[in-house]
Image (cartoon, protein in one colour):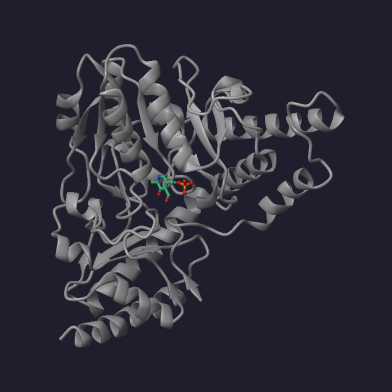
Length: 407
Ligand code: PLP
């Protein structure tokens, strides 16, 4: 099997499982319990929080453990918007994940918020001038994703955050796909809130993180026992939090080298696919004109203060290669590739049983028919050149087979 669907999920890393194991067995206490077992669990949770804060460059008290990216996005958007007294207007983009778009829609339907959805250009990038024009005195929140799950486009987050800061508007970014590939430093990004998900990083499903800078107030979404400083009630997933912290630290430890190596492999793969199937459309940001990935954006560190790298969009996630194959269907190609032992995705795997065209590709200006022919390949740090050469050859075979069937 060749697994090229890392944007959908990743396996749990052995080191992560080993770090979690004691918290699931002997050291299984509830961190709210006032006995040795509870206090031990609380120490483990505090340690995980400190470790995540170090990786992000924030205070430990800014870290809220959640059940995953979806909950982090929901809590950030509903929590910040409902706690902010200045108005009822939200700015977002047309290519956000459903967890963001549906949370924004909830605020619109139930709480009467007005929403400005920023369009993107043909590479998927939000226009800064349009963002500037959208911000109003009554804007309560701007939420723009760091990197897109379908076409890998990296938004100029630092520049958008700067616009928001000028108007004292809270800014949230969904960094679920960026984690492990792009720098997450809060100071460099300049945002107030940032969502992460464990299972994209080598931690298990069911654990996530929301960072919210301390000075921002947050209305809880889950009410109950007041855990996570009252911001997210529910007995903490201690083992998950420890696993998340380990996975993030591991991902950060070799991020720059891994991202550069993966981007080079991805670039060669894209050239190979486009040579074999000249009619294919490479969706999202073009590769750099020198043929290599621009790695400036990957090189920032958690403490890095420079905003300029993010302003030089469009960048692309180093592990994303997404195409449309006109005259086919993404689902048929997926089946053919699956027969050859290749696991990838038709668009994104994040919406259950949806056969609608991707709202992301439509926003990039591709028609409904072309959008139905999308296939996304998302590499991991373990993907090899040999695997990608096999996949490129199988794509050509699958393309010819599906084309000949569809006449
Ligand atoms: N945001 C983005 C950009 C994603 O790609 C995903 C999942 O694919 C999510 C949010 C949701 O994360 P989770 O699966 O942890 O709920």
